Figure 1: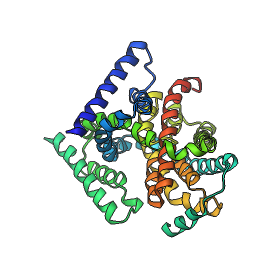
Figure 2: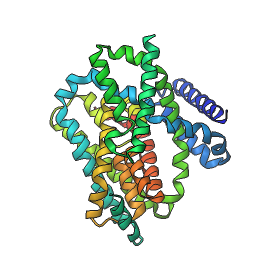
Figure 3: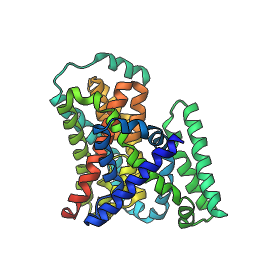
Length: 128
Length: 226
């Protein structure tokens, strides 16, 4: 029941955001993402909202992978594009991802002002 | 009747895949997103079912996906505390990782003459799948290819990320989390939580905040790039 209340509140926020965006003429912004930004600010300011929404949000996030299976299955209608653009797709998945990873690591090192936590190193080795 | 069948099949496959994934101790090729997707694609091909019929059947998932995106606000706020001790490094890592990843993909796309829709598709590679799908739809990309790219990027990061970071003697737990979350989104975040709560929380924060900011900024600036 608590989960349903949480989901209903999220739905209300999403619909309000969608109609507000249409009303003010911001058609390019996805309503779900603006609603996410609004809710983030609301939860930071009013912490008690988190307690009300936690069961609903938890349920939705738990089943989130299920919700984008249909989107992934949609790859089947893009077979020709996949065949044409496979070089870009493979580069994006492997090359650009690893470039982003290395870049994030160097940027963190550059700005981090505290000693590293060596215990994590050994823990990571154990898990891999 | 067909509608109900595909809806139930998708849910059943997902539940089965979650069970298999947990029993296998998190083998990535049994990931609950990948396995049902592959099985459904093969089934649709074998049974000659058009994608439009399948899509009509699973339409409710589309609405739940939007609600799930909004629900991400709670993890973002929950993970704020983990990163606030080193805000400048966290912000620098997220911005550098995101811009480099997207920049490399878009530049290579431009060099090889990819169409605008493909550039819009790879431009969302650095954000988590639900946000990527929503954002690429807003800027004219292909939702399914964007989702596939994001999921596969997550697997690459989860598999190759930790060994690379270890080889580079990068041992800061918050840093490891931020790097994995920025490059590999939800799948890498799941791997990060398997390493430690701190790495996982930092990864979750990086994934969510990077996704939120990119998803808000990209639709506003993208028209000027195309």
